[in-house]
Image 1 (tube, rainbow, N blue to C red):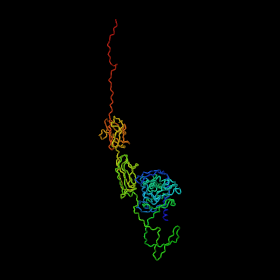
Image 2 (spheres, rainbow, N blue to C red; image 1 turned 180 degrees about the vertical axis):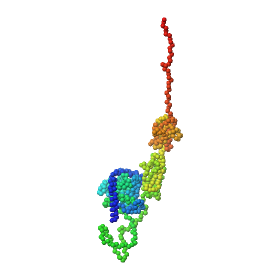
Image 3 (cartoon, one colour; image 1 turned 135 degrees about the horizontal axis):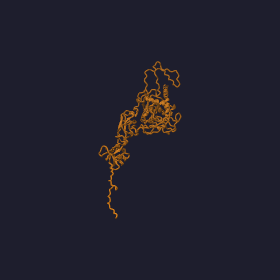
Image 4 (tube, rainbow, N blue to C red; image 1 turned 90 degrees about the horizontal axis):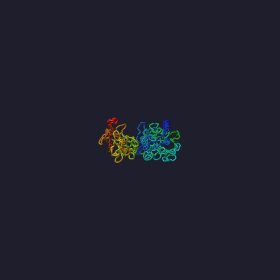
Length: 626
């Protein structure tokens, strides 16, 4: 009776405290349009963030508001506020124990979601609270070595009788029901929600709602939708209400969430405490029968040193529903009273020996060393992909590989190199051989060395580091395509002929090669000329050195007018060189302009009118006759 009264008091206190806030949060949670989940993969050798994404529906809930377990945590918390939350394995209150595989799945989902959506601040204890309320931690940890439930966990048919009315959406593929949908698996996703949010967290090629690793990661992504920050109370309430739109559900989940935050411990799979009370208050046949709760190990009673007191029969009639007390056996006053042996209700069994194998611990905790795997030199030319990926091995104290460890790769240093997707960080999970390789590494345009650093997520082990180098693209041959004749120009003008040069490396066209052009006074000169031809620069600037980049066909082209003659007549050379040894010279001839002849002045010639003329000799006129 006291236990029942205590539970009722706790329910009333918990539900009454947040009902107003929960109703407001429920109304708010229906308004924003949902965003697609950042699908990823946290298992195998694939990098997080490489899954598919589908726009989810804007209403409804993850579970279809299916029934759930309503039992609240015990009043005695597993630890005091502020005390360490990492308690020894298999210690503390039974209700605080979480089966090993289930606990590992929650922590792995937290690490995965935090790597892709750090602003959500997803705590694994929230997943544990939901898992407790939805399925009793997958029926007390009833999963196989791969995390799949030993038998399907199904909610009642969502036929509108006491629940939502949701017609079949998966043709019975997940829930075996071709008429109505049912909530499926340890996190109780309905098929339509799973079709959008389902994950393959253990890299077995299937998105399985009955697999605790897949389901826990999908639940984490679902709770983080709509850019929620679960460190904020309002967003936390909205997230839980989006899972099941019930204020009592909100109160129950948050009670377990706070309880687990005070401290938890790991128990072997299959030995978790199972809840009984359900929100629908119907026969438990609505869900598949759970395994009976596991009884605690029998204890040996302490020996009694004093004689027991005789029991006086109670003359008061028994209350209805209370079995009558067994009258005590009569004793001879002259003899020492003895307690008659009581028949045990359960046949005594030999206490079970504690397990001889080490309890399962999260993979990251088992790692003692992170070591680099020889991959050869990490080099690439500008703009190209590195031929090999940095690879590390996660090893335990005995040197054996550890599977399922989240490894963070990070690019460090002054470089524009990036992982696939233009990222500077990526998280990858070790495979069965304990190896993890970074995503493809792409060189940028900046040459020089940089570092790729690998660390174990949520651990402070020494990092494994790789040195990578970006070098310029090379060409061992530069060939002029327009003949070997000198390019002529006149001072003060530009060279009017087009110049084309082809770059090859080992006989193959070399694109993206940086070719340096320098105007020099001779083929043996080292420094650029201080006069003569120059490249057309900005704002009239004079430049006698310029870098060209070969195009997709390995060509550089100088169009007419790109090279100006300058004011100095003479012979110059354009020296072209490329990384890898390719070089060539182009002769430039600058001539002074031909002098313009001055016009000649003609000698003046006397005009006929001004020239003196001879007078004719005088002749005597005949005299008149007398």
